[in-house]
Length: 223
Image (cartoon, rainbow, N blue to C red):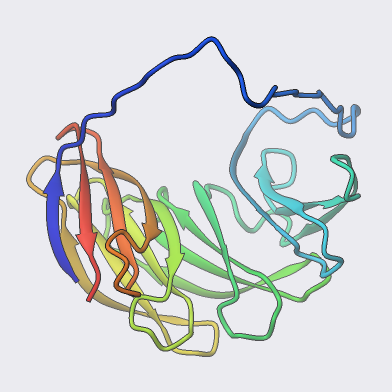
């Protein structure tokens, strides 16, 4: 993967004429819950009913929670797995890591310097498949999914604040991953969020990284 770090300028224009009126409706979900902390969260059809659900980690049970979507913007049952086993997760990302057509989760755990892989059972529950241990004080932050080596299996990219880099973790095709090369984001760049897309239309996935201290966005072209 080739890399270049590019500063971008966004130009914003305004108009008084609206082509689409945005309407937002508030829906109360499970009023009896008292959730003071929700950090990691993700969207996907985790129970295979073709309706979007919400997965998150909260401070009540420190497990993987799934709110089952009703298909009309509201949510019903809450499915909890791995209770008291996932404290400290920062970010969640969704993929099918073993190509079994059931959605799985990957998460960063900065406090323990882990990347954690959860395999889904297709009914809304998860098991821990792998914990990738990183060096002390490495602080894994943002995580995203993409097929970076074109083998039709999902790989993982993770930013590391303190190392000024992100790493690729390549699929072993069984729901586990192996660490590949680090990619530097620049001195004192402090990389944070990252996204995957094909920016140059060459059918290879590229990565964009927000560098907080450098105040730029790094564009990394996949080959």
